[in-house]
Image (cartoon, rainbow over all chains, first blue to last red; front, side, top):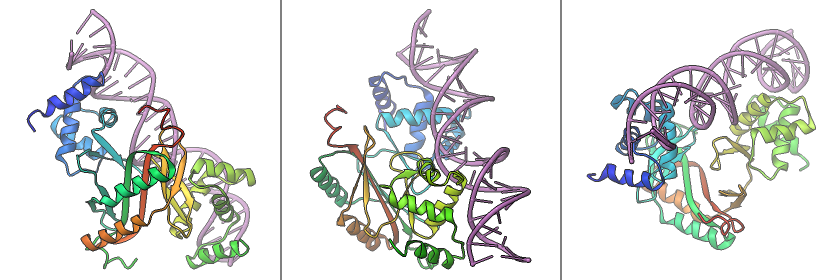
Length: 145
Length: 145
DNA sequence: GTCCATGCAAACTGTTTGCACGCGC
DNA sequence: GCGCGTGCAAACAGTTTGCATGGAC
């Protein structure tokens, strides 16, 4: 947590881009949150700390952070994007169709699927999104179907 | 292929909706295509057979067909929707980041992942999207990264 | 005849872009 | 000081909706 901003600056410099307070702030907010925020929600939280940041900058920053591999975009069954700071451990998402809750999970089987795909099709895998939807433990009894 | 329209009519009636030439045509075109069309492309193919069908109707029809469980919507790494007629066998998608090619595949491991998730989290699963991206066999050498 | 479905155009949502100014380097 | 990054507002793409007419049942 200490050399935090420096790492970001490093990454930006390597890509020939500049460090700005807005970029630091966006990444900070994203990492502090429990993840899966959409651009609006993220922008609201950013504005709480610096009201002058614009939504356009949030989008542009997210785009840069994605280029750097620090942020990922997910759809999670919705039509608009949800953004998440990348962590070391890969993980996937379950969303409840009723209450919207998101449960994260991991499974080593995903790696096996990727490997099988590489061998069978000769492709190279760079990323995998797994999104399961259904009803969470609390909602599955309430919702008949 | 014979009792084709009748099955659709059956499904529609059960949902209290009417059978129309547009609905039949949209589903027909979608099943005849290799899948993964977006609304515009689908509409273009539909218009080739009946120029009077509007894009709005295509969207409304896709919505109905999704309610009936006959059509699925995927994002496939893009921001807009891609639509596919549902088949008996589940399958998942790989898309090439360079040429855009879509490869369909199946894996029994997905079922195991779902099952594990149900047991661990107590959820009920209704659907799973697995989207792998990377470079296809033809593109992976061309694209350094 | 009733009422759902359609075509059209306008509205809407999420996202991107042109431009002039400001700030990192 | 040079040039990228920013804020603002306008543009944009995909999708949805209000309304009057037409067709399914």
